[in-house]
Structures are given as C-alpha cells and as structure tokens.
Image (cartoon, rainbow, N blue to C red; front, side, top):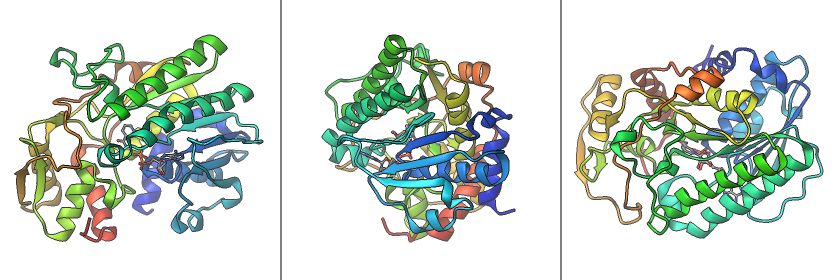
Length: 351
Ligand SMILES: NC(=O)c1ccc[n+]([C@@H]2O[C@H](COP(=O)([O-])OP(=O)(O)OC[C@H]3O[C@@H](n4cnc5c(N)ncnc54)[C@H](O)[C@@H]3O)[C@@H](O)[C@H]2O)c1
C-alpha cells in the first residue's frame, strides 16, 4: 500500500462507520483545489471506490481548474463534477445538495495580506451563498473557520477551549482573515438559530501534510522548500512563538466527523493538543525526524508577512473528543517524516 493510500485509509478508519450516511448523497465541496480540499476529494473517491454501498456524488468547486494529477488519479471519476467558480460572485447551482463543505478561502498570511478585500468577500459573501444553498436543500453544512479567531489568547486560556471568545484586533494586519472567519461563524450561528440549519463550524489548528504547495508560505512549506534548496530554515521574530501541528489524515477524520455528527450552530476545535512547541523546537524535531543537522537563522518577519503574530496556539480538544469521537494519533516526528519524504520528491527548492 502506498503512503498516500495508507493515509486516506487512516482518514476512513477515524470515522468509525459514520461515513455510511454519505451513501447515495450529493456533497458540495468549495475550495476543492486547495491543500485540504484535495485531501477531501481523494477521501471521497476512496469512499466511493471501496467503502460506500452507493457512491456519494461530489461537486468540487474552486476558482482554479482542477490539477491534472487529481482528475487523472481518481478511481471513480464519474462521481465527481468539477466546477470553476469564484464564490465572491453569485452562484446558481441547480443540483440538490445533501452536504456542503465550505473550505474556500484565502488561507495563508502572505496571500491574505496581499488580498484583504478578496479575503473578506469570500468569508462573508461566499459563506452566505453556501448557507443559502444549504438552507434551500436542507443540507448539513460544514464551515471552515480557523484557530485564528482566538487571536492572541491570554495564556490562562491555552489550551484554548471553544468557549474562549478571542483577543482579536478588528483593524490589524491579520484582521481581514481573523474577522472574516469570525463573521462566517456568526453567519452559521444565525442560520442555525433562525432556520434550524445544521451549520457546523470547525476551527482547524495548523494542519500540515503532503499536498501543501511549495509557495504556500506557511511555516512547514517554507522549511521544506529551504531544505530542498540547501538554504537555512528562517525562523521569524525570535522563534519562540508556539504552535501545535496536526497531520492531515487526523484532521480530515475530525472534519468529516464534525460534518456528520456535529451540532448545528456549534464550533469544534480540530488539531493536535500536543506537543505545543516553539518554532525553534520545531526545527529540532525536524532534525530528529530526518536524522541530520538542519541549519537555521533567526530573521525579522519579511515585509509581506503580517505582523501581530499570535504568541501561543494550542487547542483544547475535549469537545471534539467527547462529542465527535475525534482522536488524532499521528505523532509529530512520524508526520514530519511523511511530509518531508513527499516534499523531497516534489518540491523544487525554489520559492
Ligand atoms: N490548513 C490549515 O492549517 C488551516 C488552518 C485553519 C483554517 N484553515 C481553513 O481551511 C480552509 C482550507 O485551507 P487550505 O489549507 O486547504 O487552504 P488553501 O489555500 O490550500 O485552499 C483554499 C482554496 O480555496 C480556494 N478559494 C479561495 N478563494 C475562493 C473563492 N473566492 N471562490 C472559490 N474558491 C476560492 C483557493 O483557490 C484554494 O484552492 C480555508 O478556509 C482555511 O482558511 C486551514
């Protein structure tokens, strides 16, 4: 079994049978061309080919046309329709949908810093359109918010539970993303209370894994590109800001559990709660995972990177574990080994 197939099988194992509700249904996925979207496309294809009695039809929407390797690699291509559309423009979808997974968004700081209005447009208008569609069809909807809605949390609230209200600037360099995600959550909450819609929110915490673009500019793709190009790893600021990292197969299981079992109008943290480590310690873990010395340099934040970086980030997972049966299990070193094996084979070393 290839690593790729093993990872997708691991996603399905994490669902404990909840996936059977997808049989014979139609699922709309927005943001299908992105890192997490591609993982879900592959998971749905695997479910259709090997698990579900009746296939689940997938409508995969993104502004970018699907990459050749995705379409060519599908085992059940007839079950997937790709739709190229910008969700900040009106969407008329005649198809009935049973599930709507709304991932579309401008996710990486370097990109949302450059496109703040587009970031806000897809957060508000895009989310509203997907909610209207879900309302029209009585569909279950999963909205991709972010751990960033917590802003820079008071250390008393780290690990951070869903009840923490956040410490966020409405006018800072990150606000287009953070406040955009927050208004998306508010929309989900309004549709849940006003229309009894099963609109469930997930707040992912630093998901990583094969499939992240080299020019994604989040920390691990930056490190992987530097390693491939023989450059030192650049640690921004003082390198002491802490994060937890969640391997994609664990996170995907969490997202699907939230879609299938989450309560409407509720938010669920999805990520890993250990280890919470500094960026310096992450570089150490990479050394351990790869079994070789890795050079690094502490540098100022680049001009195109938004300031106001949160100091700490770590989820409290009690709600997701208790209500959804979410149980991430891929250890950091193991996930890093898998990710760097993939980047070594696919990245060019040039960003
Ligand atoms: N990966 C993470 O660790 C993480 C953490 C927190 C939140 N999230 C959220 O999860 C979602 C998916 O993240 P990702 O890592 O796959 O991001 P990504 O940038 O790889 O993918 C996002 C996709 O959305 C598409 N998109 C952007 N604007 C659009 C628009 N107007 N209309 C249609 N499609 C549009 C992009 O083309 C891209 O393919 C995002 O909403 C992101 O904010 C991700």
